[in-house]
Image (cartoon, one colour):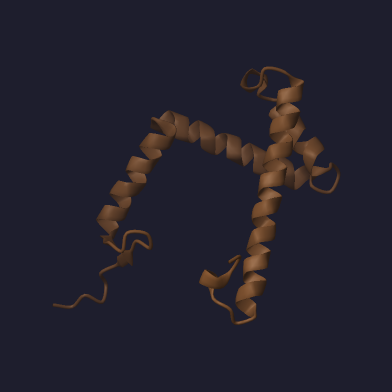
Length: 121
C-alpha cells in the first residue's frame, strides 16, 4: 500500500492523528459554532475585507486609533456610546501590540538558540 499521497496532520495539543476528512469536519464544526450559518460567515468575511481595504487606503494618513475608531463608527449598534467604542478601540490596539511584542520577544529568544519552553520562565 502506497501512502505517499495520504495527508496526515498531528494535533499539537491532543497528539491525535488527523486526516483531511477529520480536519474538514473540525473546520466545519468550528465555522458553525463561530458563525451559525453560511450567511453570517459571508457577512463576517465582507466586514473583514472592508476593514483590510480601508486600512490599506488609510494606514499612511490616519493613526491606528483614529482609523479603527472611524471604522467602528460604521457599526453604531455595537456600542452603547462613543466612550465604549473608544475603549474597545484602545483595548484591541493594546492587545495586538502586546501579542506582536511577545512574538518578537519569542523570536529573539529562539534566535539565541534557546527553547520555547524556557521562554518567559
